[in-house]
Image (cartoon, rainbow, N blue to C red; front, side):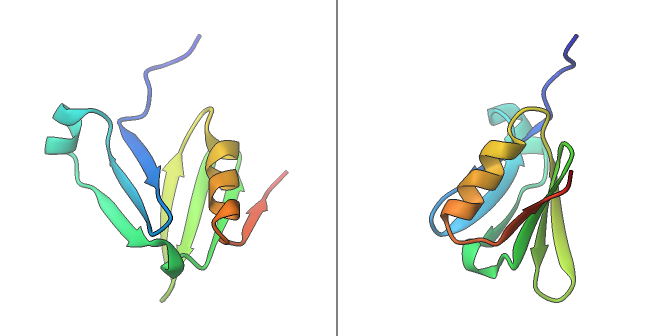
Length: 86
């Protein structure tokens, strides 16, 4: 049985990564976060969690039950170094 989807979605473009609420209503009430793609030092997948490492010891996490491999593939295709834990 599958639970409700996470309230956030990740949008990856050639220039930036944005994490925002899923749907108009949630985007209006949930905080969003974005960063330039060239500022991402690396990305790591740990199970169903994607961790983005940023400069100055900052990081951003994004949980996903089904899209982790797709997210990592998108990041890798845009030149972000990626690793996956077993």
